[in-house]
Every structure is written in structure tokens, then in C-alpha cells.
Amino acid sequence: MGAVAFTIPRNASTKRAYSGINILTLWSAAAKRRFTGHTWLTFRQALAVGGCVRKGEHGVTVVYADRFTPDAARRRAEETGDAAGSVPFLKRFTLFNADQCEGLPVASTAASHPSESIAPTADAVIAATGAVIRIGGGEAFYHPGLDYVQVPPVHAYSEPINWFRTVFHELGHRTGHPSRLNRDRSGAYGSSAYAREELVAEMAGAFVCAALGVTPTVRHADYIGSWLAVLREDNRAIIRAASAASKAADHILQRPAAAPSAAVWRRLRRMARAAPGREGKEGRKSMTE
Image 1: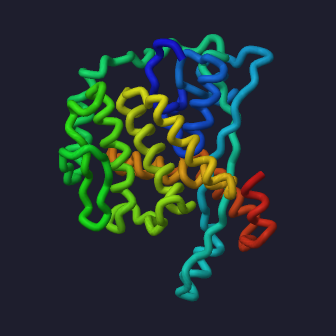
Image 2: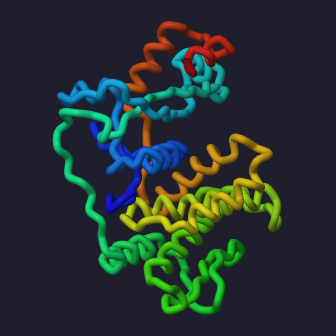
Image 3: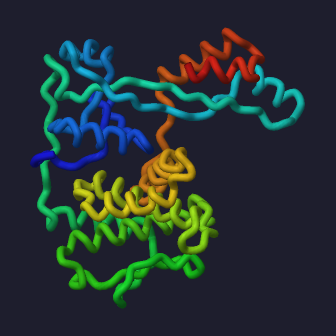
């Protein structure tokens, strides 16, 4: 993708970062179409800022998934003392890269940073996690029972930046500890559960690297590919793993979980008022359209 900095995709209008499977979707689209940046926006957002999508351009579909508790269900829960039932919803958006638009306000382009300049920031992120990092030996791993990360010394790597890539992968595993994000780590080597956790940690490491301006290496793609072969039996595994990886990356970077936008909440409230008490099959259908 040329000299453009490898970063987490963001919305050019709201500046919000995309997460989960949307990161992989947008990275893939940017690479295949050779876009020069990682900023995206909807057709209407392009118009709102004084620009437009060029005629004939094709967008990329991304999704926003969450759960919503209708007002009627919340009121019944208050009356009965039971837990309020929530309804899953999925909203699809079509995004266009800034390269596909004309007349957009000129935005500053993220600069590529030499590896040595990123080290202080990466060091600060690692220190802020409070993780116990033991340096030595010839292997990198996370010990879940004793809750520490072991990595070889920096000089064991061909480039110092590869040491950070490795640490962030292992910190990805660390986020699964019961005291943190509490992921299933019960799988034995070679099992689907083990493969899923490795996939989460590898993507989490890649997401953290991209957030810091460190380009994820080819190793990331090869590593993910080898585990995808194990996960073919579950075609939704990559979606769940990407979601878990985003949560893990946010935990490492100490970012709060992204909340639904005000526009999404307004739409959900309108839907709930229009169909009070309909949280059955029909109500679920309406929220995914």
C-alpha cells in the first residue's frame, strides 16, 4: 500500500475508529484497490462535508452489531423484577474510501514513523498494562496460571520492532485472564478452542501495532491463515475472533469500549416506540433490515 502509514481505519467525518471484522474488511479492500489511506465515509457523509462519491465507484459493506433492550421489556422487568430481555440487531453500512471521493476537506495524512521513534510509545503502552514481563530464554509465551509474559531479549530479534510485535501478541493472550476479559482458554493444542484463542491474540497484536503506527508484518497474515484452516468448520469464527481481538486491543491500549452513536440510539428508540412490546421474532427481523 505504498508509503502510507498502516493504521486502524477511521471514519473521515466522525473520526471514530472501526473495530472487529470491519478492520479486516477495510484493510483488505484498501490493499486490493491500492487506496492511499485508511479513512472512510458513507455516501451521505461525503455530501454533508461538501464532497461527493465519484460516479461509478463501488463501496464496501461493513456492519454494526449489538443488543438493544426495548422500552416495553425494560418496563416489564422493573415491574416483575426479572432481567430485561435484549434483542440482537445488525445494521449494515456502505463505506467509500476517501480516494473514491471528490471535494472532501483536505485531511492531514498520517505519517510513517521510523521504528526507533515508535519504541518509547510502545514501551509506555506495555508499562501501563501493569503486566509482568519476564525477559529471557528462547521462546515467547503467556503463562495463564502465574499470569506473566515471557519473551526472549530484544537482541534475539532481527529488528527491535519485532520484539514489540511479539510482546503485543502475548499481551493479547493475557487479556483473556479471568480477571480481565475472561475468554475461554481451556482448549488443548490443536483444538478449535486453542486455534480461536491464537487467532484472537494474533489479531489483537496486529490491531495494537496498527494503532501505534507499527506495520503488522507478513507473519501476522501467515499466522492467521494457518489457523483459519483449522477454523473452517465454523464460518462465523473469524467474526467472533475479530470482535474479541478488538476488545483485547482496547484493553491493552486502555481505551473505553465503543458505544453506539447517537444516530443509532435515536433509530433504535424510534423503532421501539413504533412497535411497543414486540420483542419476538417479528421485532428481531425489523432491527436487522
